[in-house]
Image (cartoon, rainbow, N blue to C red; front, side):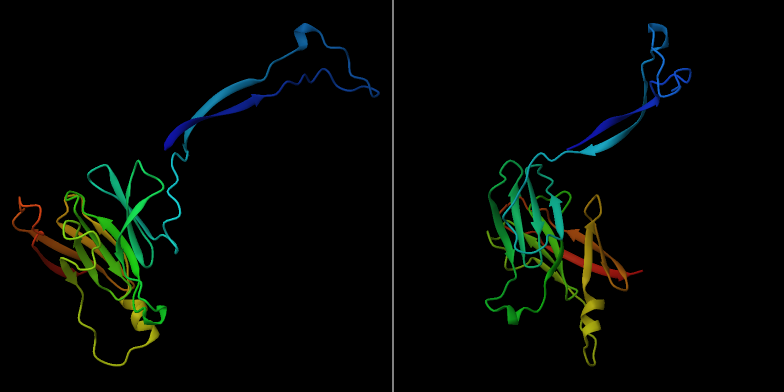
Length: 217
């Protein structure tokens, strides 16, 4: 929770220049020489206060937190997992995406960012270090191993190096307010992806169909 806190400053101290020390002695004070400090109010400063702690859900550093449009849930993502939380429950979460292989030697990519769709509470997108963006529909299954839509550029021909993966990695993604556009950022470019949702299915068991096209700045 963030709240405003007023800053107060003491501008006049309780001192009387006439009461100077003479030969190691301070003259006696009378009631007329006593002065109280004057306190003045200044501008407000925002102060954050922790209301809840959601702990013991990630083994790696958290790179993304995104609130859901339903006002009840949010997601947190680290390098290998995305967890779904209820705002009122701090000690339990649901793992909805897990890219950790059985052997860590087989790990080929990590999650770099994740965000809920701003208007469709069942949809979210996450990006990876290989440059791909996946859209998932929470109505498909409890563990979203499969995706509704995958966007990735074809790998460039030629030899690969350590810097190839660094340049390809998507560092962050953000939906526009109305949800029709998705902005992604990698090492060299910004890309805007446009979405068309057709139709907005009334049957909640049917995943939304998506079409996507991207262009570079």
